[in-house]
Amino acid sequence: MADKKEENKKRRQARRQALENKAKEDTTKAKSWAREWLDALIFAAIAALIIRALFLEAFRIPTPSMESTLLTGDFLLVSKVHYGARTPMTLGVPFTGIYLRGMELPWFRLPGFMNVRRGDILVFNYPVDDDAISQKTNYIKRAVAVAGDTLGIRDKAIYINHQPEIPEETFEQHYEVTVRERLRLSPSKVRSAGGQVLPSPGDRYRINMTAEVAEEMQHWPEIEHVVPLVLPVSFNDNARQPFTFAQGFRGNYHHMPDIVIPFEGQEVTLSDDNWHMYSDIVTRFERNEVSRVGDRFVINGDTTNQYTIQQDYYFMIGDSRDNSEDSRFWGFVPDDHVVGRAWIIYFSWDGERMMPRLRRLLNRIN
Image (tube, rainbow, N blue to C red; front, side):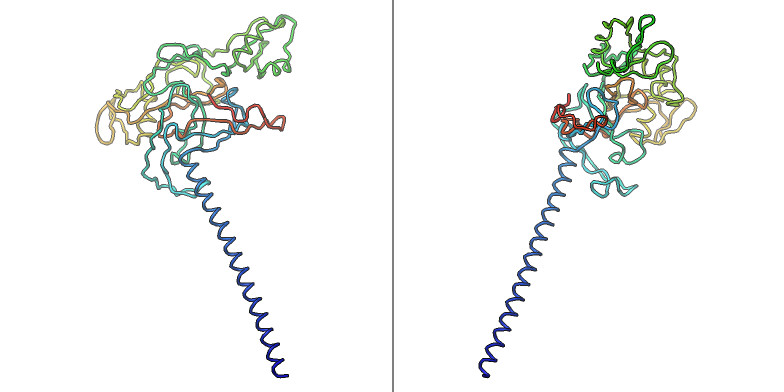
């Protein structure tokens, strides 16, 4: 009898031990599973951070300033390898806008396989913002002129190195449209053709459209004239923009004299006539202390009117030429503000129709 009780006791102990061993094994497996997932998530986060910092970054088109090349609702991949990625410029929380203000890291641009070319579509940090460079708002425009180019705007037409710009087929601008007597223009017909009727004073229609649509519209039976809308030189929209870069030349964004886009190593002579063009470069972007003594400039304690440009600059304009606030309004984009080159549309969402634009998926950006 005693032997039987002892045997039962040993069996209970064996079962208890087996249960404890199984519980330990299950706990070990759970910890191992959790550790594997945690390791995978950490690896994925690090990989995503490296890809975003050095290779590709996603960007969404929020406004129509690049239409009809890029549409509101397009989702892009921006290549940082074309021009070379910037190493981190601030210390902050990855994938957020949280960063340690007042602390800027020493940084440099990694080698790329090409320089910014005239006509490239760039994502860049908005120069007017006061944040650290990499924390400024991302903008997207086309580089119509690069460092060393001579740019002028005459009656809205852009001239590069004294030659008329060759426009892309997707460029849009405002046209004035006059209809024949006693006839009206159907806004729905204009929309179907690819144009947009805008609020217009008087008896003329103001329409935003491409040159191709304007050419087609010229043959409509109700149309008498279709001409590009060109503002007079004296026009200044002070209600919209108190002072613009173009106004500094006593013009507006339809009229600017020839200027040389600043380039690294360029020697310029500062004066009252051109200070509006170089003031942001000398003070904001290249961080010099500047004061005035009469008609002379004092730069970092030296009295001189000569200044050497420290980096390349670009003149950026949106493809929807009359629907874009760009370098014509706020000036040059410094090279250190360039994020990357717009590369491919990976998704596009039509907010009006509430459906994807399938034909735009995986389109290369030119």
